[in-house]
Length: 161
Image (cartoon, rainbow, N blue to C red; front, side):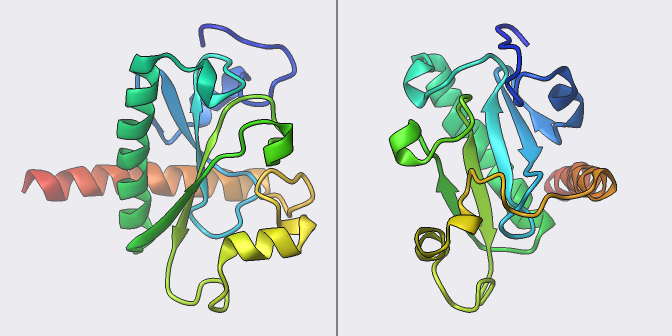
């Protein structure tokens, strides 16, 4: 990683190793405390606090890479819907000072028919950037990371056929 900020959870070297997909400037990581199965994050490799800290090239790459990650997650988790969300700034609910885009894969009735954003507003325990959500064990996290990597290979094989 280019610019690293000590103490930042997304600047840790192991994130690069735990990414299930990467581009020149971004990593795709499975969320350690997913709201729903498939909930993942896209983070810049260099430390950037805000979307506004990304240059034009990185901004364009963010969208293209996030589309690719979303297609992969939809393939892996058999979904045709998704939400993208980012909290940019403390007043917007950002609790980690490193830009990250949440990709939440959706399916019919996955939250009992309720909208996830409404649930977040109603219950502080399910905030996107909340440390109070249940966290995956190391084994669970590794399972999902490896599963998505495997699904990426399968998705590419299908597109080549």
